[in-house]
Image (cartoon, rainbow, N blue to C red; front, side, top):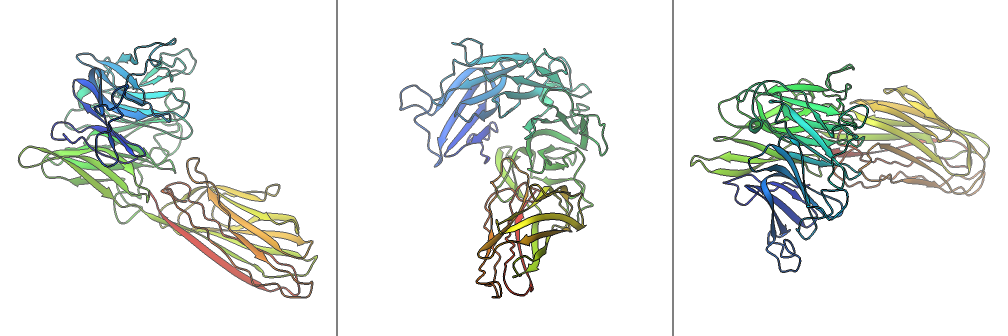
Length: 520
Protein backbone atom coordinates (compact mmCIF):
# COMPACT_ATOMS: atom_id res chain seq x y z
CA UNK A 1 0.00 0.00 0.00
CA UNK A 2 1.13 3.53 -0.79
CA UNK A 3 -0.19 6.79 0.59
CA UNK A 4 -1.61 9.70 -1.40
CA UNK A 5 -3.59 12.84 -0.60
CA UNK A 6 -6.44 14.75 -2.19
CA UNK A 7 -5.25 17.36 -4.71
CA UNK A 8 -7.53 19.77 -2.83
CA UNK A 9 -5.59 19.11 0.37
CA UNK A 10 -5.92 22.76 1.34
CA UNK A 11 -9.53 21.93 2.17
CA UNK A 12 -9.40 18.39 3.51
CA UNK A 13 -6.91 15.60 3.74
CA UNK A 14 -8.49 12.76 1.83
CA UNK A 15 -8.36 9.16 2.90
CA UNK A 16 -7.03 6.99 0.14
CA UNK A 17 -6.19 3.52 -1.10
CA UNK A 18 -3.67 2.85 -3.81
CA UNK A 19 -4.09 -0.44 -5.64
CA UNK A 20 -2.20 -2.00 -8.52
CA UNK A 21 -2.40 0.70 -11.17
CA UNK A 22 -5.30 2.59 -9.59
CA UNK A 23 -5.59 5.36 -7.01
CA UNK A 24 -8.82 5.75 -5.04
CA UNK A 25 -9.53 8.91 -3.07
CA UNK A 26 -12.49 9.90 -0.95
CA UNK A 27 -13.27 13.50 -0.09
CA UNK A 28 -14.82 13.93 3.38
CA UNK A 29 -17.34 16.56 2.33
CA UNK A 30 -21.14 16.45 2.65
CA UNK A 31 -21.58 13.58 0.18
CA UNK A 32 -19.75 10.24 -0.02
CA UNK A 33 -17.38 11.09 -2.89
CA UNK A 34 -15.03 8.57 -4.49
CA UNK A 35 -12.50 9.44 -7.19
CA UNK A 36 -10.38 7.01 -9.18
CA UNK A 37 -7.21 7.92 -11.03
CA UNK A 38 -4.89 6.00 -13.29
CA UNK A 39 -1.36 5.32 -12.09
CA UNK A 40 -0.11 8.26 -14.17
CA UNK A 41 -2.45 10.66 -12.37
CA UNK A 42 -5.12 11.06 -15.05
CA UNK A 43 -8.80 10.56 -14.31
CA UNK A 44 -9.99 6.98 -14.88
CA UNK A 45 -12.71 7.38 -17.51
CA UNK A 46 -14.03 3.85 -16.87
CA UNK A 47 -15.12 4.79 -13.34
CA UNK A 48 -18.37 6.46 -12.30
CA UNK A 49 -20.95 5.24 -14.80
CA UNK A 50 -22.34 2.13 -16.48
CA UNK A 51 -21.17 3.02 -20.00
CA UNK A 52 -17.78 4.77 -20.43
CA UNK A 53 -16.52 7.36 -20.90
CA UNK A 54 -17.23 8.25 -17.27
CA UNK A 55 -16.29 11.24 -15.10
CA UNK A 56 -13.88 9.21 -12.94
CA UNK A 57 -15.82 10.01 -9.78
CA UNK A 58 -19.03 8.97 -8.07
CA UNK A 59 -21.18 10.52 -5.37
CA UNK A 60 -23.01 8.33 -2.92
CA UNK A 61 -25.34 8.98 0.01
CA UNK A 62 -25.39 12.33 1.77
CA UNK A 63 -22.82 12.19 4.51
CA UNK A 64 -19.15 12.27 5.34
CA UNK A 65 -16.93 9.55 3.94
CA UNK A 66 -14.02 8.93 6.28
CA UNK A 67 -12.18 5.83 5.06
CA UNK A 68 -12.31 3.20 2.35
CA UNK A 69 -11.08 -0.31 1.56
CA UNK A 70 -10.77 -2.31 -1.63
CA UNK A 71 -12.10 -5.87 -1.65
CA UNK A 72 -10.15 -8.62 -3.46
CA UNK A 73 -12.85 -8.58 -6.18
CA UNK A 74 -12.31 -4.86 -6.77
CA UNK A 75 -15.44 -3.59 -5.04
CA UNK A 76 -14.99 -0.46 -2.94
CA UNK A 77 -16.30 -0.03 0.60
CA UNK A 78 -16.59 3.47 2.09
CA UNK A 79 -17.38 4.18 5.74
CA UNK A 80 -18.50 7.37 7.42
CA UNK A 81 -21.69 8.86 8.83
CA UNK A 82 -24.77 10.66 7.45
CA UNK A 83 -25.20 14.43 7.52
CA UNK A 84 -26.63 15.61 10.81
CA UNK A 85 -26.71 12.13 12.32
CA UNK A 86 -24.40 10.13 14.57
CA UNK A 87 -24.77 6.75 12.89
CA UNK A 88 -22.24 4.37 11.42
CA UNK A 89 -22.76 4.24 7.67
CA UNK A 90 -21.21 1.85 5.14
CA UNK A 91 -21.63 1.96 1.36
CA UNK A 92 -20.30 -0.45 -1.24
CA UNK A 93 -19.59 0.35 -4.87
CA UNK A 94 -19.14 -1.99 -7.80
CA UNK A 95 -15.87 -1.90 -9.72
CA UNK A 96 -17.35 0.65 -12.16
CA UNK A 97 -18.20 3.02 -9.31
CA UNK A 98 -21.97 2.45 -9.14
CA UNK A 99 -23.61 1.50 -5.87
CA UNK A 100 -23.62 -2.27 -5.33
CA UNK A 101 -27.25 -3.32 -4.93
CA UNK A 102 -26.24 -6.73 -3.54
CA UNK A 103 -25.05 -4.94 -0.39
CA UNK A 104 -27.15 -3.89 2.59
CA UNK A 105 -29.81 -6.58 2.93
CA UNK A 106 -30.30 -10.34 3.09
CA UNK A 107 -32.15 -10.68 -0.22
CA UNK A 108 -31.10 -8.37 -3.09
CA UNK A 109 -31.82 -5.95 -4.58
CA UNK A 110 -30.59 -3.77 -1.72
CA UNK A 111 -29.85 -0.08 -1.35
CA UNK A 112 -26.07 -0.48 -1.43
CA UNK A 113 -25.86 1.46 1.85
CA UNK A 114 -26.30 0.24 5.41
CA UNK A 115 -26.39 2.05 8.74
CA UNK A 116 -25.16 0.68 12.02
CA UNK A 117 -25.24 1.62 15.69
CA UNK A 118 -24.95 5.17 16.93
CA UNK A 119 -21.64 6.87 16.35
CA UNK A 120 -19.43 7.77 13.40
CA UNK A 121 -17.52 5.36 11.20
CA UNK A 122 -13.92 6.57 11.00
CA UNK A 123 -11.80 3.63 9.86
CA UNK A 124 -12.26 0.26 8.16
CA UNK A 125 -10.43 -3.05 7.88
CA UNK A 126 -11.43 -6.17 5.96
CA UNK A 127 -11.13 -9.68 7.32
CA UNK A 128 -9.96 -12.50 5.08
CA UNK A 129 -13.45 -14.04 5.23
CA UNK A 130 -15.00 -10.89 3.76
CA UNK A 131 -16.40 -9.50 6.99
CA UNK A 132 -16.08 -5.74 7.47
CA UNK A 133 -14.76 -4.17 10.68
CA UNK A 134 -15.48 -0.48 11.27
CA UNK A 135 -14.42 1.64 14.22
CA UNK A 136 -15.38 5.11 15.35
CA UNK A 137 -16.62 7.17 18.28
CA UNK A 138 -19.73 6.16 20.15
CA UNK A 139 -22.67 8.57 20.34
CA UNK A 140 -23.92 7.32 23.70
CA UNK A 141 -20.60 6.90 25.51
CA UNK A 142 -18.55 10.13 25.19
CA UNK A 143 -14.84 9.49 25.04
CA UNK A 144 -15.34 5.85 24.04
CA UNK A 145 -15.20 4.15 20.67
CA UNK A 146 -17.20 1.39 19.05
CA UNK A 147 -16.02 -1.58 17.02
CA UNK A 148 -18.70 -2.76 14.59
CA UNK A 149 -18.56 -5.86 12.40
CA UNK A 150 -20.68 -6.46 9.33
CA UNK A 151 -21.14 -9.60 7.30
CA UNK A 152 -19.98 -9.53 3.69
CA UNK A 153 -23.55 -8.68 2.60
CA UNK A 154 -23.66 -5.62 4.89
CA UNK A 155 -25.78 -7.00 7.72
CA UNK A 156 -24.59 -6.70 11.30
CA UNK A 157 -22.65 -9.77 12.42
CA UNK A 158 -24.51 -11.08 15.48
CA UNK A 159 -21.61 -13.38 16.37
CA UNK A 160 -19.57 -10.30 17.29
CA UNK A 161 -19.55 -8.26 20.48
CA UNK A 162 -20.02 -10.82 23.22
CA UNK A 163 -18.76 -14.18 24.47
CA UNK A 164 -21.99 -16.10 23.83
CA UNK A 165 -23.91 -15.20 20.64
CA UNK A 166 -26.30 -13.86 19.56
CA UNK A 167 -24.60 -10.50 20.12
CA UNK A 168 -25.30 -6.90 19.17
CA UNK A 169 -22.74 -6.90 16.35
CA UNK A 170 -20.59 -4.24 18.01
CA UNK A 171 -18.42 -3.69 21.07
CA UNK A 172 -17.88 -0.48 23.00
CA UNK A 173 -14.24 0.18 23.75
CA UNK A 174 -12.60 1.35 26.94
CA UNK A 175 -12.55 5.07 27.51
CA UNK A 176 -13.58 7.83 29.78
CA UNK A 177 -13.79 11.58 30.07
CA UNK A 178 -16.20 13.83 28.27
CA UNK A 179 -14.64 14.78 24.93
CA UNK A 180 -16.90 14.61 21.93
CA UNK A 181 -16.62 12.41 18.86
CA UNK A 182 -15.02 15.11 16.71
CA UNK A 183 -12.03 15.14 19.06
CA UNK A 184 -11.33 11.41 18.85
CA UNK A 185 -9.33 9.76 16.05
CA UNK A 186 -9.33 6.08 15.20
CA UNK A 187 -7.47 3.41 13.30
CA UNK A 188 -7.99 -0.34 13.01
CA UNK A 189 -5.94 -3.30 11.82
CA UNK A 190 -6.55 -7.05 11.83
CA UNK A 191 -3.88 -9.53 12.80
CA UNK A 192 -3.34 -12.80 10.86
CA UNK A 193 -5.00 -14.69 13.75
CA UNK A 194 -8.14 -12.55 13.44
CA UNK A 195 -7.54 -10.35 16.48
CA UNK A 196 -8.51 -6.70 16.01
CA UNK A 197 -6.24 -3.83 17.09
CA UNK A 198 -7.82 -0.40 17.55
CA UNK A 199 -6.04 2.94 18.04
CA UNK A 200 -7.79 5.85 19.75
CA UNK A 201 -7.23 8.11 22.73
CA UNK A 202 -8.47 7.88 26.26
CA UNK A 203 -11.03 10.68 26.01
CA UNK A 204 -9.56 12.47 28.99
CA UNK A 205 -9.18 15.95 27.50
CA UNK A 206 -9.72 17.70 24.17
CA UNK A 207 -6.31 19.42 24.46
CA UNK A 208 -4.12 16.87 26.26
CA UNK A 209 -5.37 13.34 25.61
CA UNK A 210 -3.40 10.11 25.85
CA UNK A 211 -3.09 7.50 23.17
CA UNK A 212 -5.08 4.33 23.83
CA UNK A 213 -4.63 1.02 22.01
CA UNK A 214 -6.97 -1.93 22.54
CA UNK A 215 -7.02 -5.44 21.14
CA UNK A 216 -10.08 -7.63 20.68
CA UNK A 217 -10.49 -11.33 20.17
CA UNK A 218 -12.24 -12.36 16.93
CA UNK A 219 -15.43 -12.61 18.98
CA UNK A 220 -15.30 -8.90 19.85
CA UNK A 221 -14.28 -9.43 23.48
CA UNK A 222 -11.24 -7.58 24.86
CA UNK A 223 -8.07 -9.69 24.66
CA UNK A 224 -6.66 -10.01 28.18
CA UNK A 225 -3.24 -11.07 26.86
CA UNK A 226 -2.74 -7.51 25.57
CA UNK A 227 -1.66 -4.45 27.49
CA UNK A 228 0.92 -5.69 29.98
CA UNK A 229 4.07 -7.79 30.28
CA UNK A 230 2.43 -10.66 32.20
CA UNK A 231 -1.17 -11.71 31.48
CA UNK A 232 -3.96 -11.35 32.45
CA UNK A 233 -4.04 -7.74 31.24
CA UNK A 234 -6.72 -5.11 30.77
CA UNK A 235 -6.93 -5.69 27.03
CA UNK A 236 -5.82 -2.12 26.31
CA UNK A 237 -2.89 0.15 27.03
CA UNK A 238 -2.61 3.91 27.50
CA UNK A 239 0.41 5.30 25.72
CA UNK A 240 2.30 8.56 25.36
CA UNK A 241 0.24 11.60 26.18
CA UNK A 242 -0.72 14.33 23.79
CA UNK A 243 -1.58 12.12 20.81
CA UNK A 244 -4.73 13.90 19.71
CA UNK A 245 -5.47 11.94 16.53
CA UNK A 246 -4.36 8.41 15.70
CA UNK A 247 -5.86 7.46 12.35
CA UNK A 248 -2.85 5.58 11.00
CA UNK A 249 -2.08 2.07 12.21
CA UNK A 250 -0.13 -0.77 10.64
CA UNK A 251 1.02 -4.17 11.90
CA UNK A 252 4.52 -5.41 11.38
CA UNK A 253 4.80 -9.10 10.43
CA UNK A 254 6.29 -9.85 13.87
CA UNK A 255 3.10 -8.51 15.49
CA UNK A 256 4.43 -5.11 16.55
CA UNK A 257 1.96 -2.22 16.20
CA UNK A 258 2.94 1.12 14.65
CA UNK A 259 0.63 4.11 15.09
CA UNK A 260 0.94 7.58 13.58
CA UNK A 261 -0.90 10.64 14.76
CA UNK A 262 -0.73 14.23 15.84
CA UNK A 263 0.41 15.69 19.13
CA UNK A 264 -0.01 19.25 20.34
CA UNK A 265 2.00 19.10 23.55
CA UNK A 266 4.70 21.51 22.36
CA UNK A 267 2.40 24.35 21.38
CA UNK A 268 2.22 23.38 17.73
CA UNK A 269 1.44 20.34 15.66
CA UNK A 270 3.83 17.42 15.58
CA UNK A 271 4.01 14.20 13.63
CA UNK A 272 4.26 11.40 16.16
CA UNK A 273 4.95 7.71 15.49
CA UNK A 274 4.61 5.13 18.28
CA UNK A 275 5.50 1.45 18.26
CA UNK A 276 4.24 -1.24 20.60
CA UNK A 277 5.48 -4.76 21.08
CA UNK A 278 3.07 -7.56 20.18
CA UNK A 279 1.92 -7.89 23.81
CA UNK A 280 1.00 -4.18 23.97
CA UNK A 281 3.96 -2.62 25.77
CA UNK A 282 5.96 0.30 24.34
CA UNK A 283 8.89 -0.94 22.26
CA UNK A 284 12.14 0.18 23.95
CA UNK A 285 14.02 -0.37 20.68
CA UNK A 286 12.05 2.33 18.84
CA UNK A 287 12.50 6.10 18.84
CA UNK A 288 16.20 6.65 19.43
CA UNK A 289 19.66 5.66 18.19
CA UNK A 290 20.63 3.74 21.32
CA UNK A 291 18.18 0.87 21.90
CA UNK A 292 17.01 -0.72 24.08
CA UNK A 293 16.59 2.46 26.12
CA UNK A 294 14.22 4.31 23.78
CA UNK A 295 10.88 5.87 24.62
CA UNK A 296 8.96 3.80 22.06
CA UNK A 297 7.92 6.85 20.06
CA UNK A 298 9.35 9.71 18.03
CA UNK A 299 7.91 13.20 17.44
CA UNK A 300 8.87 15.52 14.59
CA UNK A 301 7.91 19.21 14.97
CA UNK A 302 6.43 20.89 11.90
CA UNK A 303 6.08 24.51 10.89
CA UNK A 304 2.69 25.78 11.99
CA UNK A 305 -0.03 23.35 12.92
CA UNK A 306 -0.57 19.95 11.38
CA UNK A 307 0.26 16.35 11.89
CA UNK A 308 0.09 12.78 10.64
CA UNK A 309 -3.02 11.25 9.13
CA UNK A 310 -1.92 7.89 7.73
CA UNK A 311 1.11 5.64 7.38
CA UNK A 312 2.41 2.55 5.61
CA UNK A 313 5.41 0.23 5.63
CA UNK A 314 7.63 0.45 2.56
CA UNK A 315 9.01 -2.69 0.95
CA UNK A 316 12.35 -2.13 2.71
CA UNK A 317 10.66 -1.84 6.10
CA UNK A 318 10.92 1.94 6.38
CA UNK A 319 7.93 3.81 7.78
CA UNK A 320 6.20 6.33 5.51
CA UNK A 321 3.85 8.85 7.13
CA UNK A 322 1.55 11.32 5.34
CA UNK A 323 -0.27 14.31 6.74
CA UNK A 324 -0.63 18.09 6.63
CA UNK A 325 1.25 21.13 7.83
CA UNK A 326 -0.12 24.66 8.00
CA UNK A 327 2.18 27.22 6.40
CA UNK A 328 2.64 30.86 7.38
CA UNK A 329 -0.29 31.85 5.15
CA UNK A 330 -2.70 29.51 6.91
CA UNK A 331 -2.86 27.01 4.04
CA UNK A 332 -2.64 23.27 4.63
CA UNK A 333 0.13 21.61 2.67
CA UNK A 334 0.45 17.85 2.12
CA UNK A 335 3.57 16.43 3.77
CA UNK A 336 5.29 13.03 3.65
CA UNK A 337 7.90 11.87 6.15
CA UNK A 338 9.97 8.67 6.07
CA UNK A 339 11.53 7.02 9.10
CA UNK A 340 14.46 4.64 9.19
CA UNK A 341 14.17 1.16 10.63
CA UNK A 342 16.53 -1.41 12.06
CA UNK A 343 18.58 -3.64 9.75
CA UNK A 344 18.80 -7.28 10.81
CA UNK A 345 20.62 -10.34 9.55
CA UNK A 346 20.29 -14.07 10.07
CA UNK A 347 23.38 -16.10 9.30
CA UNK A 348 23.83 -19.86 8.99
CA UNK A 349 27.16 -21.68 9.28
CA UNK A 350 27.78 -25.35 8.51
CA UNK A 351 30.73 -27.49 9.56
CA UNK A 352 30.99 -31.13 8.53
CA UNK A 353 32.78 -33.79 6.47
CA UNK A 354 33.33 -33.23 2.76
CA UNK A 355 33.40 -37.01 2.16
CA UNK A 356 33.22 -40.25 4.14
CA UNK A 357 33.36 -44.00 3.58
CA UNK A 358 30.31 -45.98 2.60
CA UNK A 359 28.59 -47.25 5.76
CA UNK A 360 30.17 -44.63 8.02
CA UNK A 361 28.22 -42.61 10.53
CA UNK A 362 28.19 -38.94 9.54
CA UNK A 363 27.74 -35.88 11.73
CA UNK A 364 27.84 -32.17 11.07
CA UNK A 365 26.84 -28.96 12.82
CA UNK A 366 24.48 -26.17 11.85
CA UNK A 367 24.77 -22.79 13.54
CA UNK A 368 21.98 -20.25 13.18
CA UNK A 369 22.83 -16.73 14.37
CA UNK A 370 20.72 -13.61 14.78
CA UNK A 371 23.18 -10.78 14.20
CA UNK A 372 20.68 -8.00 14.90
CA UNK A 373 21.64 -5.85 17.85
CA UNK A 374 18.05 -5.35 19.01
CA UNK A 375 15.40 -7.52 17.33
CA UNK A 376 14.37 -11.11 17.86
CA UNK A 377 13.46 -13.57 15.13
CA UNK A 378 10.10 -15.21 15.81
CA UNK A 379 8.86 -18.74 15.19
CA UNK A 380 12.19 -19.86 13.80
CA UNK A 381 12.50 -23.34 12.28
CA UNK A 382 15.56 -25.27 11.14
CA UNK A 383 14.92 -28.32 8.94
CA UNK A 384 17.30 -30.88 7.47
CA UNK A 385 16.28 -32.50 4.15
CA UNK A 386 18.65 -35.39 3.31
CA UNK A 387 18.84 -37.41 0.11
CA UNK A 388 17.88 -41.09 0.04
CA UNK A 389 21.50 -42.17 0.52
CA UNK A 390 21.52 -40.86 4.09
CA UNK A 391 19.58 -43.04 6.51
CA UNK A 392 18.85 -43.04 10.26
CA UNK A 393 19.06 -39.24 10.27
CA UNK A 394 18.60 -37.34 13.53
CA UNK A 395 18.77 -33.67 14.47
CA UNK A 396 19.32 -32.24 17.93
CA UNK A 397 19.82 -28.86 19.55
CA UNK A 398 23.13 -28.88 21.43
CA UNK A 399 23.88 -25.36 22.62
CA UNK A 400 23.02 -21.68 22.41
CA UNK A 401 19.95 -19.51 22.82
CA UNK A 402 16.30 -20.38 22.34
CA UNK A 403 13.76 -22.83 23.66
CA UNK A 404 14.11 -25.40 20.88
CA UNK A 405 12.01 -28.48 20.28
CA UNK A 406 13.43 -31.02 17.81
CA UNK A 407 11.42 -33.73 16.07
CA UNK A 408 13.23 -36.50 14.19
CA UNK A 409 10.14 -37.58 12.29
CA UNK A 410 10.39 -34.44 10.14
CA UNK A 411 13.99 -33.49 11.06
CA UNK A 412 12.89 -30.05 12.26
CA UNK A 413 13.78 -27.93 15.28
CA UNK A 414 11.56 -25.00 16.19
CA UNK A 415 11.72 -22.18 18.71
CA UNK A 416 9.32 -19.33 19.54
CA UNK A 417 12.15 -16.84 19.17
CA UNK A 418 15.86 -16.38 18.63
CA UNK A 419 16.80 -13.23 20.49
CA UNK A 420 19.03 -10.49 19.17
CA UNK A 421 22.77 -11.15 18.92
CA UNK A 422 22.36 -14.81 19.82
CA UNK A 423 22.99 -18.15 18.14
CA UNK A 424 21.90 -21.78 18.31
CA UNK A 425 23.87 -24.89 17.30
CA UNK A 426 22.44 -28.19 16.06
CA UNK A 427 23.99 -31.56 15.29
CA UNK A 428 22.73 -33.78 12.45
CA UNK A 429 23.79 -37.45 12.36
CA UNK A 430 23.18 -40.01 9.64
CA UNK A 431 24.47 -43.26 8.12
CA UNK A 432 25.85 -43.28 4.57
CA UNK A 433 24.12 -46.12 2.73
CA UNK A 434 24.93 -45.46 -0.92
CA UNK A 435 27.54 -43.80 -3.08
CA UNK A 436 27.00 -41.40 -5.93
CA UNK A 437 25.42 -37.98 -5.97
CA UNK A 438 24.16 -37.09 -2.51
CA UNK A 439 22.46 -33.86 -1.55
CA UNK A 440 21.49 -32.30 1.73
CA UNK A 441 19.32 -29.21 2.05
CA UNK A 442 19.09 -26.93 5.05
CA UNK A 443 15.96 -24.85 5.32
CA UNK A 444 15.76 -21.99 7.78
CA UNK A 445 12.69 -19.80 8.01
CA UNK A 446 10.40 -17.75 10.20
CA UNK A 447 6.63 -17.83 10.09
CA UNK A 448 4.78 -15.29 7.95
CA UNK A 449 1.53 -16.36 6.26
CA UNK A 450 1.58 -13.35 3.94
CA UNK A 451 5.24 -13.61 2.99
CA UNK A 452 7.06 -15.53 0.28
CA UNK A 453 7.10 -19.31 0.31
CA UNK A 454 10.26 -21.22 1.30
CA UNK A 455 12.99 -21.61 -1.29
CA UNK A 456 15.77 -24.18 -1.18
CA UNK A 457 19.52 -23.98 -1.72
CA UNK A 458 21.09 -27.35 -2.49
CA UNK A 459 24.59 -28.74 -2.04
CA UNK A 460 25.58 -31.70 -4.25
CA UNK A 461 28.67 -33.90 -4.01
CA UNK A 462 30.06 -36.34 -6.59
CA UNK A 463 31.19 -39.73 -5.28
CA UNK A 464 33.31 -41.58 -7.86
CA UNK A 465 34.28 -44.69 -5.86
CA UNK A 466 34.49 -45.81 -2.22
CA UNK A 467 38.18 -44.83 -1.97
CA UNK A 468 38.08 -41.72 -4.18
CA UNK A 469 37.76 -38.22 -2.80
CA UNK A 470 34.52 -36.51 -3.61
CA UNK A 471 34.28 -33.39 -5.68
CA UNK A 472 34.48 -30.14 -3.77
CA UNK A 473 31.19 -29.02 -2.34
CA UNK A 474 29.73 -25.59 -2.46
CA UNK A 475 27.23 -23.50 -0.54
CA UNK A 476 24.58 -21.39 -2.19
CA UNK A 477 22.48 -18.55 -0.90
CA UNK A 478 19.31 -17.94 -2.88
CA UNK A 479 18.25 -14.36 -3.48
CA UNK A 480 15.27 -13.10 -1.50
CA UNK A 481 13.08 -10.21 -2.46
CA UNK A 482 10.26 -8.76 -0.43
CA UNK A 483 9.40 -6.13 2.17
CA UNK A 484 9.33 -8.41 5.19
CA UNK A 485 12.42 -9.72 6.85
CA UNK A 486 13.34 -12.70 8.96
CA UNK A 487 13.68 -10.82 12.21
CA UNK A 488 11.27 -8.01 12.87
CA UNK A 489 9.37 -7.40 9.68
CA UNK A 490 8.28 -10.96 9.15
CA UNK A 491 9.43 -13.74 6.97
CA UNK A 492 12.51 -13.30 4.89
CA UNK A 493 13.68 -16.80 4.13
CA UNK A 494 17.32 -17.63 4.52
CA UNK A 495 18.30 -20.96 3.06
CA UNK A 496 21.80 -22.33 2.96
CA UNK A 497 22.73 -25.76 1.64
CA UNK A 498 24.73 -28.17 3.70
CA UNK A 499 25.87 -31.55 2.53
CA UNK A 500 27.62 -34.84 3.19
CA UNK A 501 29.48 -36.89 0.60
CA UNK A 502 30.53 -40.52 0.49
CA UNK A 503 33.97 -41.75 -0.48
CA UNK A 504 37.47 -42.30 0.97
CA UNK A 505 38.77 -40.78 4.19
CA UNK A 506 36.95 -38.11 6.18
CA UNK A 507 37.87 -34.45 6.22
CA UNK A 508 35.93 -31.53 7.64
CA UNK A 509 35.02 -28.33 5.87
CA UNK A 510 32.75 -25.43 6.58
CA UNK A 511 30.43 -23.16 4.65
CA UNK A 512 28.56 -20.09 5.71
CA UNK A 513 26.18 -17.54 4.32
CA UNK A 514 23.97 -14.74 5.49
CA UNK A 515 21.17 -12.51 4.31
CA UNK A 516 20.25 -9.08 5.64
CA UNK A 517 16.93 -7.23 5.34
CA UNK A 518 15.75 -3.85 6.49
CA UNK A 519 13.07 -4.41 9.06
CA UNK A 520 10.76 -2.75 11.51
